[in-house]
Length: 290
Image (cartoon, rainbow, N blue to C red; front, side):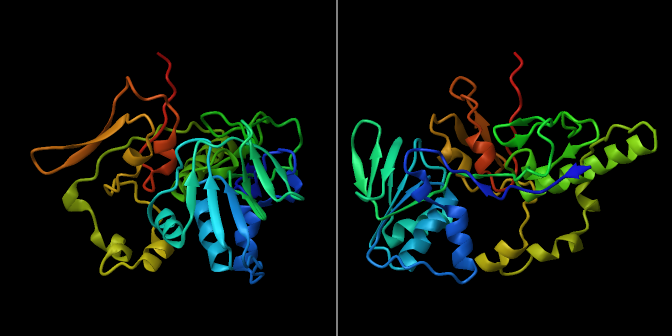
């Protein structure tokens, strides 16, 4: 069996009062399904300042909120049009903020250290995990995701897992893992060895441009959003450089007009923000075995 169920269970940090806090997943899903919330003159606080949190902030303003404040425990991971739109509508972003509890009767969100914010509505946006209750508990998980080895095999030798069921990633990661796992399972069923994949660069003159027609012509934001699945080529967006709190990533220009993003090993702490924020899947985390 191959588990490729994605991640659709919103994470809720169980702070006191969490049962009165909505998830960004449910908040945005309700809006998309036509269940518009009445936030007129409400003070909205969002725990988590990633791109989903910014989407929630913008929608809160769209549905009447008088103010929206987004909080994070570290430098926010939000970038691009999402954060620009949210800030333009009036969203404040505060960090570092460590939430202690929510008091719905007081309409206040308290932080460690004693400070607080007025909050009529609190929305939590700290990621999603897969729903795995259809699996036996004997199958190992790590922090809510299925633990797999290098061949995507779980602790049950007959159960494999790929995509967001194992960790959050890009759609291209899931597609690639599906292809590789298909070869692995086929080889096992056929009781045949699986030959290692040999990756070779394709000669430029042999690339057929007709395969990339979808990326030609004038591209609007809406059109790109409907078609782009990340080609794995850096598009020089500076997102990795901007999100690195320790300044470990820098962009270097070359004399021939090319460029590259390089990492300062002395500054990098291996947080993985660059790999998580890259829209093209260029950055990858490699275990440090030194």
